[in-house]
Structures are given as structure tokens and as C-alpha cells.
Image 1 (spheres, rainbow, N blue to C red):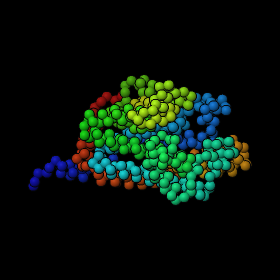
Image 2: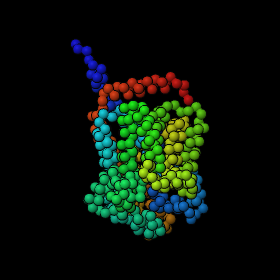
Image 3: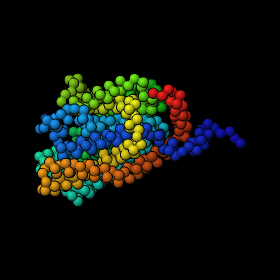
Length: 440
């Protein structure tokens, strides 16, 4: 028999590995839970904006709403900060995924586009269907409540071309005008009010952020020096944009912060969480002067700055995530099996709740407002809309699973077996080291 080369041995050994190892690295359970809770924050933000806008007004009309808005309770429905937590998590998880699948970068980009694009297009079709059946009930609902913001939403053109454009080109590549994203695409962007599913504004940032993480992983494969040069330059370039979150997530992944045991001293992560929440909560009332100057400074050397309040939330969200993943009590709670299981509905909830809010919940409100008081109709529409969004997300999850499976199969074909064996050895050594370490 001829002796096999190391490459042949690696291929033979890799063929015996389970499909799950070839497809993707194991997910860190409690990170899934963080994503799920962040999706709930976004859902609550939008429903409160629609039916209880006083909770988000800069000058609330009631003392109770003012007290809630200026307290840490506001963070529970601060969907803006939740979006930046999403971006940080993506930076972490994608780093882990791309580290093993770098042989055909264009295929990885295509797979990522499929992963994000199929659910986005499906959500757009659902929204257009509801709009066709129910109409823009949000317009009348907003008029009855005196909520101009709600009336202005869902102002989309009901045509096949508009549906396809919004669910693909706008969502993944162009983004929307006056929203964080790629500024030089502004001449081709539509307003966010013209979208069938407003949360789609984040997907173009997710897509381009994914490409940035893939680039960093490619740099890391070439040399450690090149990777750190790219990280430093990229961090400086995106310091006043949403894309800074992806670099934060990547840095946390580089040091394996989520996989390592928690620190013995818990005061620092607690301080990070408290300061991060405070940073996010006070942003509607105050931003430091240096941040305002940074975001408005005219220069081509930095990525175009977003509004200071949004950038402050981005920094606050990064602090919150860095603290949570190093807190023992948070890891224990977020690792609960039931919470992890339900958190897998995060992307479906994120996408499907908008048409339900503007369509079904608004219709219920308009109907009930003729029978009961406005305030009672608001509470009923709010409750029913949230419950319907949760139920619809279970159905929509089938689309999400299909997109994830299709993306995984495409990426699996590009895996280099030698790379798989290398990372399997690293993972085994990491587990052995963790087992040998004293429990915290």
C-alpha cells in the first residue's frame, strides 16, 4: 500500500466527521438568547411607538411615561440599542464561522446574501399581501391617536417591481435614505417609509458588515500582523458608524471571550453593563460634546458619521454585550434551554412583526375605537399585535430554517478538510484546557 499524504489523510479523516462539524461551528447557546431578547426589544419599541408613543416622546405628556423613559426600564424596549447588539453578535458569530470557511470568499458572500435575502423577500411578500387584503389601516389608526409617525409608515407602492426591489436590492445592498448605512448610495435610496418592512434597514448593514468580517478573517489567515493592521485601521475608519459594532464583536471573538470561563472578579463586567445601559438610556437627553463633534466632522478619512444619539447607543450596546458575556449570573440565565429554544425565533419575530403591527393590529384598533375608548382600544391592539407576531414567527420560522439550510449547504461545499481538522484540534485543546481550569 502507498503511504498517504497529509492532505489525503486529512480528507479521509474529515469524511468521518459529523455533518454538523463540516457545516458550522457549534453555536454558543447563551449568545442565541441575547439575540432573542434583543428581538423582543425591537418588537416592543415599534409597538410602543405605534400605540403608546408617550413612552418614547422626548417630552412625555404624563409623569409616569417620563419616569419610565428616563429610567433603566427604557432599555427593556430600546430597540435601537438592540440593533447594535445584533451587529456586535454578528461580528462575533461570523468570525467563528468564517474562520473555518475561507477557501472561496465569493461563495461565502453569496451564502450570506441568501441567508439574509430569502427571509427578507418572504417578509416583504407577506407585508404586501396584508396590505393588499387589509389596506393601510395604520393611516387611520395614526389619525385617531394623533400619531403622525404611525400614519406615515408603510407608504409602499403595491407593485411586483416594488416588492422585489424592497425585499432584495433595498434590503441587502442599497439601504434607505437618512438611515445608518452606506452614504454614497444615497442617490439610489428610497425613504424608509416606502419600505414594506421597516426593520429591513438593518440588513444592508448586516451584509456589508459580514463582508468586513470575512475580510478580517482572510487577513488573519495571511498573517497575524496583517489582521491586526486591518482591525486597527477598520476600527478607526468606522468609529462613528454602526459598523464599529462588527469590529467590537470580532475583537471579542479573537480573545474567545464568550467561550472562556467568566472572570473571578465580577465588578468590572457589572460596571460595563451599568455604564452601557446608562449610555443608551440618557442618549435622548444628552450626548457628550466630543461625540457630537466626531459625528459631524467633515472628512473623507472616516466613514460618514451617523447621528450622535445613535452612535452613543452603539457604544452603549457594545459595553452591555461585553459585560453580559462575562457575568456568571447572565450566562446561567441565558443558557436556560427554553430561552435558547425560543430565541431561535428572533429573526422571524424581527421581520414579521412590522406588517402585523401596521396591518392587523391597526385594523383591530380602528374597529375597537368605534366600540370602546381610545385607550382601551390601544391596549387591546397592542396586546393582540404582540401575540399575533409571536404566533406568526413560529410559522415564518420555516422560511428562516430553509434559508439557513440552503446557505449552510452552499458554504459546506467550500470547506477545506485540512482546515476542518485543524480547527477540530484547536477546539479539542480548548475544551481540555477549560476542563483543566478551576471552575469559577
